[in-house]
Length: 418
Length: 127
Picture 1 (cartoon, helix red, strand yellow):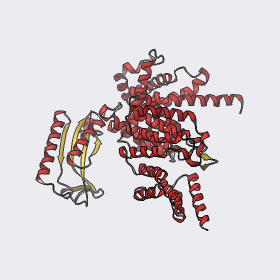
Picture 2 (cartoon, each protein chain N blue to C red):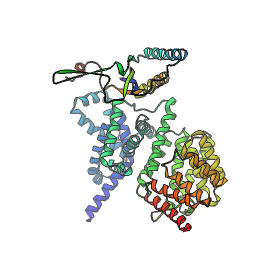
Picture 3 (cartoon, one colour):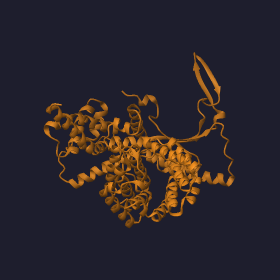
Picture 4 (tube, rainbow over the protein chains, first blue to last red):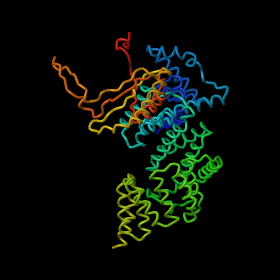
């Protein structure tokens, strides 16, 4: 590559990086100004093209978000002027549309407005009348600034399918008139829960194939942080952030050469201490606030794991107590399963296996159930049944690394029998 | 401000629910009357009604200048509208709040559909 071409590639990369970081802010503000998601998205896309031409030579502007918003508005005005609808739109918003945002004299007000805009947009994208896959796609596209291709890859669908998903979702928002606003206090808790579950789904989608999906996880973390900043009085966003941080801290130790490394076998020196410290700090603050919720409790459980120097020194009794609490406020078969694993560590595998037996119907196609059963059966010296359970787990998981791990465990048991 | 259709349906082949006792019926009617008064006073009520049901339906189609009548509802659907409200609402959230109240009153799921246009087509055409 010649120096010129290399520089051009570098410049383009920098433009894309900065743009992605601030596009959520820009899209959110433009949605407020235009009252229309598609118009905002198109306008930001146009501004991106201009940026790729101008920024490499002019330099990245000091306030990239402000630059994008101003540029996008100017181009949108030009476009809309050509249609009757546009003249309507402009005359109704004349005062806001013509204002310049290149300088923001009051930075606090500006930050608050930006947060309000993004908050409104998150709640719109995560509206409960939209199905979860649509909420996820919209959130990643509009707030995360991810390309349609990147989102499609993240969820193992074709770009065409993801485009269709986004189109349907935007159509529904427009046709049903989903309002762009932060929900009233009476609805805030439920709507916040919908937004948090979207972020957690995005994070978890990024753990299916650890190495390749780090962009989904980092996007979930970034939006999670933004949500905490936007609703600082609510404890659950903080709980979710801590939960994701503590999970993320263990990523470096989770696989070696593509092979799964179980928690009990992980090299804890490879865990990210900064993330653990931040996660622990948040959890401590949540405990002090004493407004527990499911994400805070899940974070506390991970905090106990991350606090232990070795697997053997894990405080399973505390983990079990936390699962008891979680089961009482947000019961689910998966919570019951994870609680059973804690029971196995504190009370032995027999009582834990009995719990799993009650979950077999509900979690028949959930591979972690079979994996947990397999481990307990092995501990109870029932190798034949254990091997069968590992085989079922292998058949149900979509991760190659996991499948290999389960197959290995099953083989080891049958070899012993032989 | 837009208009939304809130509808409830009956499923073909499903056994009709057991006839509620007079007391339960009266209590439910009272709640519906109160809900409709609330809709009226907030200017949300546009129209409402409940239908006789699929057995009373006829499908009419003109094919090759011939009018064909079929006894019964549209064959393709299993669910048939049983009753509905048309309401005014500022946005989907407001429409959903009404739908929740209706669902609570009648003990059935309510489908919420936004109108793309209402009134006479002639009034909605451009130019």
